[in-house]
Image (cartoon, rainbow, N blue to C red; front, side):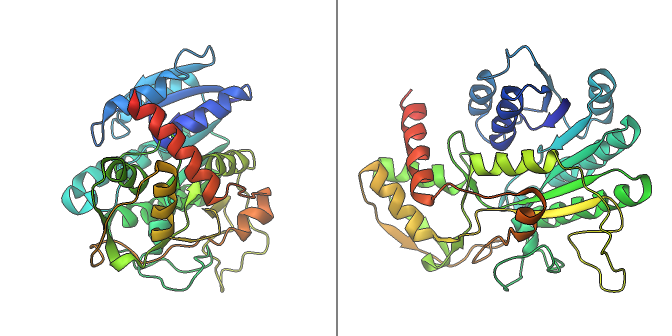
Length: 335
């Protein structure tokens, strides 16, 4: 199978590309290698598979419609996984235009290319951030998500709406995956695991927001990739039980699905820091601070729909996952 994956120099995209290549797929990677965080980490991720005989790579921006169309015309993908996006909640407060270009304009370019390219299935990254001001836990795809608290979250909700439009109008099967706090080897340096590991390694105090009351549904990278592949292999179909008078936000009469992709087991942030300290062999001061703008106190994924439809079952405990992350962290940053 020929699969186009955007964001293959990114955290999830690189891990996914390796898994797809390992099972015999032909993969075309697409990434703009921007400098939102250290491009050297992106190059190091990519170096692990860029020379694979079934892999080709294109350095281009999603907002460049001509480049996107060229990728589809030359590679002719059967299925597409769109993971490229301007990431980060707090950065969206500083540079909203970056999110419009990548997450809105770029996503329309992908949708149009899939439509005209006869793609069998588009799987795309949404985010747990779409739940915004919701307080009912666990978060379920049946819940309304109409109160985002950051532009990043709004852009991801917009992706789901845009995808539904293309599923409805053109019969394009689309599946959106709401990722929940992904962590593990080769992770993003702007996210808490590496930020905390850096400070613990240097013996510096850690800023813990919301006075330490945060909990997150930390999900190990291997479980995330497993969920992506399982959904990719099951193209979205119309829901025969869909009731337009009592609409389910997770399904449709069109070939459209939205799923939570998480660990279904929230962890207190202070517990996560404690595990990092144990594995790094030192403890540090925690500075308890108020919650930051655009942040949410808790996340917890109800993954029952994904279990039911594709047999998804995350199996990496937080203890094992943090140990594997720290092992990679030490090896990579000591080099």
